[in-house]
Amino acid sequence: MHNRNNPASFYGLGIAPRLLEIIARLKFTTPTPIQERAIPAAIEGKDLIGIAQTGTGKTLAFGIPMIQRIAQTKAKGLILLPTRELALQVDEALRKIGHALGLKTAVLIGGAAMRPQIDALRRQPHIIIGTPGRIIDHMEQKTLSFEGISILVLDEADRMLDMGFAPQIRIILNKVPKNRQTMLFSATMPDDIVRIATQHMKLPFRVEIARSGTAPEQVEQELFIVKKEDKIKLLAKLLAEYRGAVLIFSRTKYGAQKICYAIRNMGHRAAEIHSNRSLGQRREALEGFKSGRYRVLVATDIASRGIDVVGIELVLNYDLPENPEDYVHRIGRTGRAGAPGKAISFATPDQKSAVRDIEKLIRTAIAISRHPEFSEEKFIEYKIIPRHFSHKRFGRGFSRPSYGGRGGFFRK
Image (tube, rainbow, N blue to C red; front, side):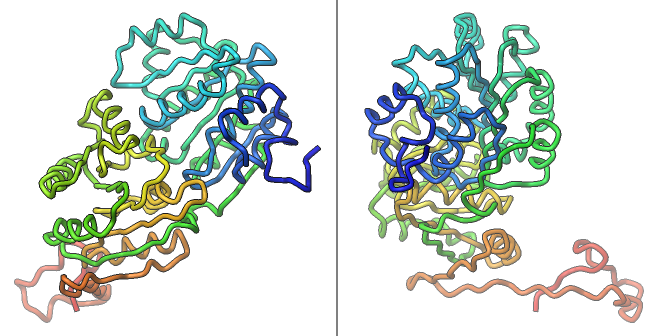
């Protein structure tokens, strides 16, 4: 029974005594809200949908019940994740808990050689952790069998769909035995995930810690309207004002390279993570950022999901993300586990609609700031030309605008 006098404890959640000892030894004393609500349902074997922001402890929310079931039965688990880095970090977290119980894992990710992965699969791992693309590769080569898989986890499910993994996920869902427990975790809940839940889950228990798309309350958000050519100069000023670890997001891998080069020229220790970097380079950058060897890490959205680092002082969106949902994931890298955090975004004068889309999702207006050493910039206001607008009065040589659909835009 749950101890109502001490709700914030791993005791009373249905966790076996041996696992409680391990959790205590690892200095996990207080479960996060997602852990407190998800662990009992998961231990009971229920299908589960967990909606929570990044940095809220989702890995242990599914990891503890999975390890307990494996230790008690002959169950096997499969965990799908969007990126290599996240797969490696989940593997590290699960092995810390399961090591004393003899837990064996196999990590199947792209960018790494197939042979060691095949060797790991031959050792009959209890849990397989991987990205959808590489798991499909092993399926096609017949080096991976889903026989005996009775627990399936889709972590960061929204991001996997954003990255175009929907076809691979459908194949895997149809191949894994139907008699299984399925747990799905996500920071947002788009329609595609609702469809997965409807088609592939059995009356899932829903745990929603924060409204889908909510920004972390403990993260202070700030926006600078800045011309594209002034971004690097403003970045230099802000890096001088903050002393701690800084995570910077670029929209493209080429942008990340340029930003990292510029930051190094400013005299800061910086590393970059994006798809042009090898797995070894990405690991080195992430470990260096964790250890403090690099003060600044520049990343793209695709690579960012594996960045689980405590103590990031500032997340800086050098470029606004392509999707508003990615804004939530980005700023969730700071202010983790209830600690205060800071998120600063750069928006160019023509990005008013992109900012409004983000604010609509998070249901919060982001405070606009101005640096005293830069001229004040404002968003450009666009006006839609009415559909009934006639171009004939301007003569035969007038042509309609080539953008804006049936009408177009012009500046006020």
